[in-house]
Amino acid sequence: MSGWRATNRARVHAALFTVALLFSANYVISKLGMREFSPMAFAWLRIAGAAAILGILVRNAPPLARDDKRRIAGFAVLAVVVNAPLFLIGLSLTTVGVAAILITTIPVFTLAAAIALGRERASVLRIFGIALACAGALLVVGGESFHGTWRSMFGTLMLLINCLSYALYLVLSKPLMQRIAATRVVAQMFAYGTLLLLPISAIPLARQDWRALSSGAWISLAIVIAGPTIAAYLLSAWALRYADSSLVAAYTYVQPVLATILGALVFGETLRPIVFVAATLIFAGVWMAGRR
Image 1: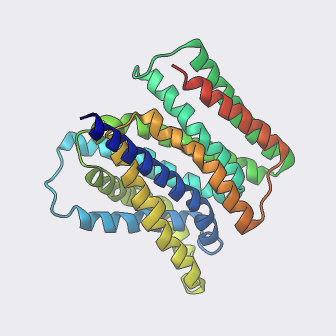
Image 2: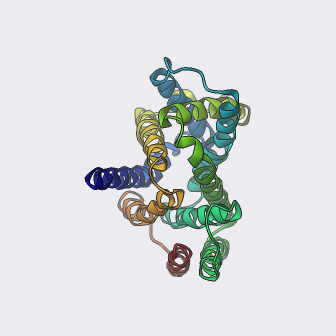
């Protein structure tokens, strides 16, 4: 029995590392795709493509209960309607490195939500860690407005809201993920997300110059649908069945390292010193918040 548990833990960690790797690649691949796609058009096509493929995978599954459908619709708002567009809009307005640093606020937001909902215990050290990490995130926003532009500051704010939305999804969806197969939940989420995002994306989709899109832009979209969307969401949802939501969120620590390296290699990006200071505050805060 202990051997099975060890094997299962290893599988969970392998799945979560794969998710972190896919999400890290998503920064670069999406940014390349949005050189030609508008962010909202790219976001809707990403969700619609994933919904179509996942719908085929679960086409023979029995129908879900009405209460479960309502819950999944709520998760779709958090993890798809709010999360996906704001990530892409924020990424298009700032750098890969800044986006990767801000994404590490997800564990802090996840813990704060779990404490607020009574699923985790609060302590002085944890509260101080949450405050310290939030201060680091706000330092990035302030640094972007002072050293960068209002455009990049707006992008960092979009990314922070994206992180908060995803953190709430991780905490709230865990009980359902333990009852229902991840494929069914995620497929339903993306189906709802496709419909809910359409009114918001209609104008960008109508204004998109489809004939000017290169094959490279379509390849970027296809990779994002297959990897950072379908595979990453399914692996993350599967891991939630066996691991705490805080552990799932903690794997975002891997993303800044991988994404910053990729951003430097592909786009030649560099980080300002204030971003390193903010990253130190965020990492220290997350470490304190995670202490038992």
